[in-house]
Image (cartoon, rainbow, N blue to C red; front, side, top):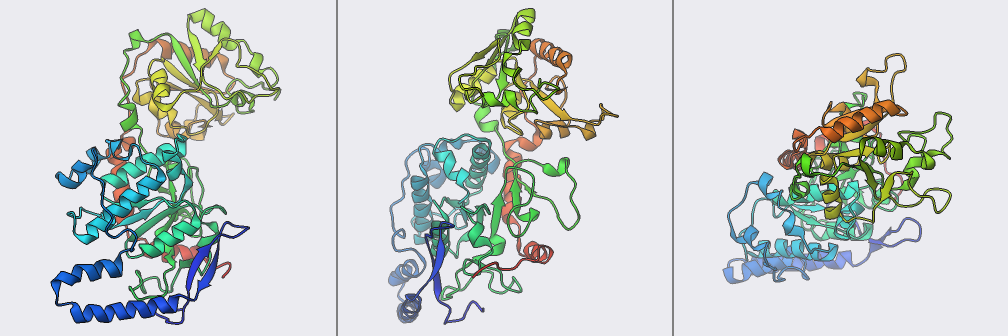
Length: 506
């Protein structure tokens, strides 16, 4: 259907019982179209009167609820409106701009900024009129206090987009995503979503939700009087913490936090995930570096849950597969006594049977917030990975704080055990970036003597702060800039052919 079809009814999202939302036709559209026509005629009559021109512009193109809202210029945000434009790489290292925001006040701020910018109240900076919608749940989760790996990733991405000047809104659900797109369709530059059934899944193959015209170059932005305000498919990207494609357009439209192409091979047609990455530079550099000689002889065990000690990929797992003895293993206690050290960790006590405690020799700490957690890491002499969690940001934080990491190698070629190209492990990124001793010690599962050696060396060997070059915040900002400045329509055309994209339901 052509986007200029006057008989095309506006489709508005409503909540459904199954997938969270559905679409219904709104008979008010024809009235709205007539209303806009009348305003266009009025604009032509009084267009020569400058005193009214700005009012007409705001009436026609801004949402009536947000067009003239006063913008808050409380510190520390005042400098970004009144001061000179800053270097994005440096600006992204200052996360104070989003302190105190909730998802609601975050949205209010950017709605106000866009409206005030359009009304001429302030000088519009670069990219202020380009809007990124962030419906992936981990963006909102950051402001709700969650600090999983996904939230650390979204934290860095928001800092980069802020530094580059983009406006952002966090929809609370799929209906609001659709509503915000329709409200700001002239400004929406990209949507960072997920194809999960409770997120964008029901929309991404739905002809009443997305627009996938043929060819894609027709009407890249619908005209103001268009009744076709579906979301252009090429503006939607799926956020995915793990390797693998998401969404209807495959890997090129799947955004990842790690350079998975370093240790995976893909077919020519398949392509690879788009690597954005993240940085812990801003937060870890706020935590003081402690000289090695001033630290206690302490090792921090990286494990969110005590049940990680009972998994088959646990560093010291029983070769026979019997995990009943893992929590009574005296390895940690004996080594602590032998070399005068302390093991600490903060675990969710979810192991079986209920009431189980960490292995002998390990001190259970109270739950730590993020600053306290980083301080505890900084005062340790090493961080031990026991197999899970995989690809955690904590090893990067440890290295940034000058603390080495012991990485569990969980698989290798039995006939060629020292061939690193055939290794896989807990933190594959550090393995395949070839970060070696004394920064990262790679220890094979069940190699107790190898683990003892690594612990002894790490306890006695100091390292400076280390941030991999590609994880500097300036590098993340550059990748985000490249990502947002790319015209994705040609790639979308190719991917639609490769994936045989078709609408699944109307």
